[in-house]
Image 1 (spheres, rainbow over the protein chains, first blue to last red):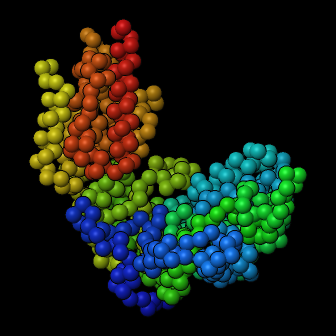
Image 2 (cartoon, chains in turn red, brown; image 1 turned 30 degrees about the vertical axis):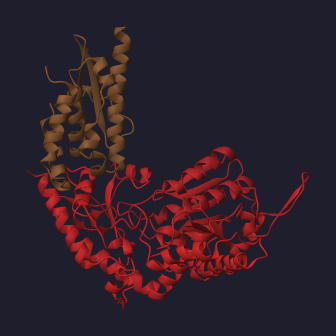
Image 3 (tube, one colour; image 1 turned 120 degrees about the vertical axis):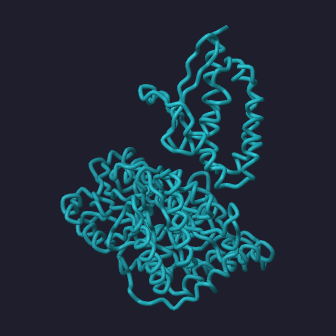
Length: 414
Length: 143
């Protein structure tokens, strides 16, 4: 299960102190926030950066000749460089700011897909995908007459690698799959699948939404063509995402939306487009959130990805051990390599009831299909309860969660 | 039935007030109410009878008899079943017009909106809407 077996060197209480939202009561109980795979909480420095921007630096970027505009532009572009380094992209121009992972994928499906997909071509996704990495491909496949294929998974929730030889063929033009599954936590063999895809000349998009705050991401080492992720799942602001794309591919990809910023020159007869990344950033971007996002990246960098992964693995291993001792609990997703996501069901109790009871006891979890209905269909279930951990969670919280779960189950055994 | 819709709503408000706004006690009580709901015939749990807009599965069947509407319901989750049982208790056996005119103020009064997060309260909204639709349909038929 462990990505790294290194021992972490983190002071968790000191980390917790940086997250104002964690220090509150919910339904009269101390909040235990285990819905981190949906969105994780924001450290004070991210919140402060948002306030500071609006109080001191607010200006539109890349335009004004005044001091505020210069400050805002510099801070905005600094984040781009931080993101570039964070995922080891070759250059900052390969980093495009979007609304989130979903928009990043839609951008590629829509712009790249419309130009490069033709009737008879195939797009390959996996059973593990979030709806955001299914529906955009269904839409463009329908429009372009291409076919959507799906990589199967085994009972543990791992992609069946042996099936790839048949699925990745000369017809395959795009392979899109997640780095880590939001529903099960499975970490996929990204490099292996990318190499297989490249061998037939297909491009690869990796949905990194669940990986970006847990795993070290090196887009050059992976040789990913596109890599998409969201700021809000890595201690950053909501409504902001990133699309990484290799320069040569982005240059050949037509713009996604028209508007300001993305143009070079406009006349009523003809418009020429700006260079990357601006070609894909029509309109005034989410300046405040981009600037604050930098603080989230610094937060992760200062703790160290290896430290975070080692600690989260400890939490996951501990929680997995404790929960599997409870009678009637069945884990959904038992891959060997997992990020800190624990999905489960309890025999005879609907996940909504479990979620409501846990909430009454102060524990925030996610219940339902987690926007992965085809994956739930694979397991013949409607949904699961999902507890997911971030670096500020503790062993004591897991103990309290396990007690809350046991007490909830007892309510149904009367 | 001599009690009005509002009489029953007031009773329910009174019952819930004893729970002291405690979330766990409230859920427990809602589940108890669900257990008291008369069983719905399996044959009535059809695709057509599923209330749309609920996250969990809710079946609702309405039948008119002697100018009144009788409701039967069930859910695959214990808490939702409790919620729908409250609605059945208030609205079943009423005339279509009574159902159409009903002002279901108990939801706010017992803080179901606050207690039962958005998803579920949408489900509750969908159930109430569906009951009103039945009321409307039957009152239109009667005219």
